[in-house]
Length: 419
Length: 150
Image 1: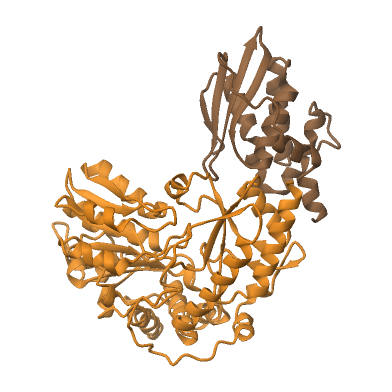
Image 2: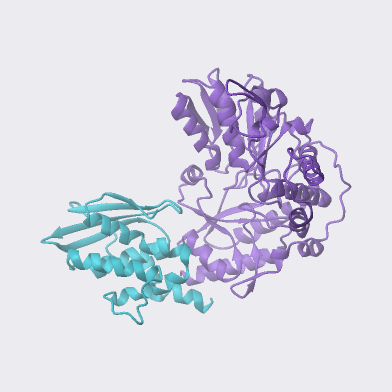
């Protein structure tokens, strides 16, 4: 994996001890269909370390109360943990301040928040929104919904056969009409790591703001939002060893200030009368209602866990798995790897001649191997590569090479059944 | 391969997947329906020539997993020559069987060799694969031209 930032590690990396790390994850010792679980569906969601599970348990059993409202001691403690996580996240992304960090339900909500709060306010009929050819549906559908409302147009940066975006076409698509660019850092369907920093600079040279879908990036590499200079960056907790239902929107301060809130309600206000409401300052103006407190606290524990291992260590281990997996899978006759960019995250999407991905998924499951089979919520990407679906193995730092051997053996058995 | 998998992927299913029968479009069908499984992108179009309330011809085109294709293929061989009313009854029984609501070992039925799909009920995520072509056939007989498993 390509180093994407120049940020100094905040935690001294410890030596990478795989078996010790695996022991942190209770799920990794489960069996499926009588076989040890080989969990290779990490791009969909990651398993959780004990530290995260225990932290959530502690909050519910010893610390539970609401945040930012009540005067009592417990609420004060919960608020400290809740707002403390915001600082932790700012540090994780190297954001200037915790004011830049908005809690969301996940990447999808983060994108929708920018679509409504920025797109809904500033885009007009004829304006253009630019996205990539391999986006997740979460970075396509909300924009299409906006276009249907206000007459803006969605434009798509085409991609090469390798899965890399065509940068020359991108530059041509950046015009006076372009009002926002929204591109994934890493493709969930193919694994491509896009040259996002360069793409942001090209957009900014024309004064166009840039949203980064970081769902597949934040859990796997060092992310430095100030170095990238993106206007917004979104990711999900559950792909980063954290709980489901919690995600992060990072936004530059002036962008967040200019945006309209998405949801109205309690907690996002400064004062309310029947005539007029003034909103709370950022980031709280975007956080109406009682938030997912336990999940926020759990996410804090997850990011602490990841930083403890060191994002450089994680990236290096996952890259080693990618290289080994690519070598082993490419050697299987009839197997085609889709997505062959030189810089990739640890995701291998593939098809097998004469075997539908769903059948691959079912037969691998019989061997205890969990992969994803389908369109990966990226149907336009599938159409680009003329396949209805692919099988996808996605690795995490807690996977081991032996598990890739189990995967390869299971694939070979699958091919035998179908020939 | 485990026995559970052999239960699902019986030889006759593997054979119909590899060599689907009646795998073609009809030029002038009296009714046809395109079926989609939006969750996985499988799609099957079923063509029927209905004469005097009898399925004189039934064919299909499309793309899907082995369960989906084999189910479509076996359906066409089984329903050809059957009456519209019988086809509806068999659709209902097949649908119940793959959902695990009809035990073909203990309950009388009209499914014949279609019982090779009885173990699909042990694989809930594959039920829609097995029933897609059947939904399309059933809708075609109702003169509905597009259907979905959702």
